[in-house]
Image 1: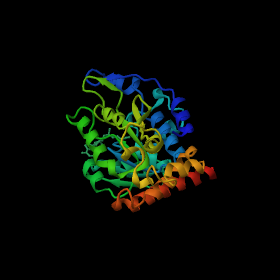
Image 2: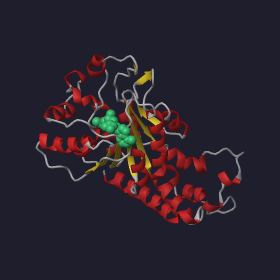
Image 3: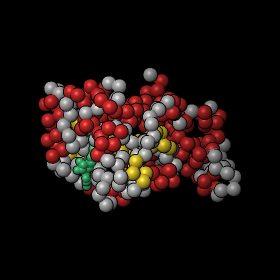
Length: 314
Ligand SMILES: C[S@@+](CC[C@H](N)C(=O)[O-])C[C@H]1O[C@@H](n2cnc3c(N)ncnc32)[C@H](O)[C@@H]1O
């Protein structure tokens, strides 16, 4: 795991207060409950550190932003000075204002109007990196989406509707094959632990089961997939008792070969560099592990090579 990412997440100190969906009062909701802004800002910082840029937000901004929201978001994020509309976060708008390519989706056509008014209010041109998809159902949008998703921001199907827990899990499952090799999953309304539970109630256990790491929690939860460990462990950490298919698969050269990927990588000192190790690994197995996935393997190799170059250029 990228040390800077760990540093950014472990130094993020927000009060982790959890609420009861059923008994929270309107006043507590507006004045006491954490606002999304600090979480959004931290997620953006982490995404930038990882060079991730394409966000898909399911469940869009329902209220137009004003200059006050801008001051609050880019200021000290004190929950007591936040305009009440910032309780929703205006996530998609702020992702876009921070330079991310943002695809915002909502079933409610009014969200489109609110986004357009937002930029009239703050007297800025509508940003070309904010793509509005309204009215559209979030699940259907994810099924049809034909680009890689680097940050999946799930905030639809409001708390209070019957199937929001199931829908957030379904949305992730539909998006799964489109997620980039390294990606973040951000979920809002995860601070409801009693009563009807938070939006992540079914999704969080699934993500943890799949090896995702929780980078922060509270009003929002941010997960990262287990990208480096998952890749390296295929050849380095499996116990000897597992089958040859796992320890010395043929597509990496096989146990007998002196040119087996892991041996070559060790000889070249690349086993200490997860990026370069993965470049070699994906080039070596392209077209061999799965003939249908030759292009995908080469793209993965390229992804790790570009990431390495970007890190060196920093
Ligand atoms: C809490 S709001 C989203 C807030 C927004 N993410 C923000 O940061 O300001 C939840 C949104 O989910 C939307 N929603 C409900 N059902 C949906 C569906 N089937 N597909 C997409 N969006 C849906 C609602 O219309 C609502 O606007």
